[in-house]
Length: 526
Image (cartoon, rainbow, N blue to C red):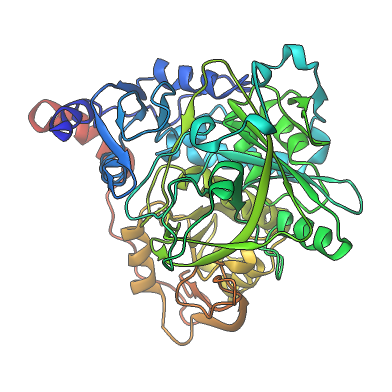
């Protein structure tokens, strides 16, 4: 059985831990995803897998594999032998961002706090950004193979990998580029796309051959707009214009990180990515649409959303909060051209009950965005940690009598919900803790809530909040996503001087002494 051999492989790497504060190349300029994979390989964080694994609709093992890797902090994998895979000659990258440490490596760090501080500082300082540069097509690896529109058959030209009970194969590694139909300003986002080829219609219908072989659908929620590409789609429809889209698949991972950051509307994520990598991003002009894409992408899919396009029914889709969306309605896009490398890689992943592979590269920009805004206004904010389940933990550098004023924790809660960007305002659960509480350890956070919070006096409930669109507990729009929600915040700081003159002393072992005793007992306990 495939699992027995794979278990032997991943158990070997269960105890591979990178030194938490070991610094990598500070600029960490990757030319492409391959450079990042080489770095993972150098640090023992990448494995080639030739074991046969099932990957087709209704008969696959990849959801189980991802859960197992998440449970053991397992390595990134290159899957070379997938059963039921339509393009077996193309290796599949799996779990490259599966730990906070590997995600930090995208920014030249291994300490998650140092990585998010770098992200926050560059996000807040636009003078550190680097505008992209355009190179000739002859120099761009993504142009090595060009497939024109009249030759495209997506069942033969795009890989399709299935997970769990999903009814379609989803494209999860695409950086999507579009331009504002009115201003021409560029937006770069990391949005998921749906393949219709061999997909199961969620309500018993079917997809035409034309749809399966020439069209995709994009998670661009536009009515009302819930993202920047949604604003572009809404504007284009209002103006009766087509919207051109280019999907650059598998780029320098810094570009992916920038693409999922809440950069203010109208500002260029490619310039922000240049700031993160310490050098301009190299772009190349597309073949059929007036857009530029990263020159070293593995694939580029050039598309158009026509003004009279339909919204197609898709499902089942597994989402990032851990539930299947049975039915959703998203815009259809026409594929005009595909370009790619001569021997490309593909990337396959699934969202499910957290944690999962790209969970952490999705969380880092959320943390960096909120951290950048809070530290600009509240210097006592030390760290922002967002758990895989999207609970926001704000750690302060002060507590008790050192707080600037009474009820300072509640002040911070309001600041989170009023933070610039798209994430703070959708924070459903926020907890403010002091410097002696480890924000990465939910047991420590729970201890702070149990011993420093009175449920009525130390909480805030907001009944009129914007929802995180995938929250299954919130009311849904006609398009199948949430619009409004409620929020709760916990002030888990010590209530001196609010209620007490002093507080009981914490009984806890000194971390440095714990390290020393661990070293002393290493031979016995290892």
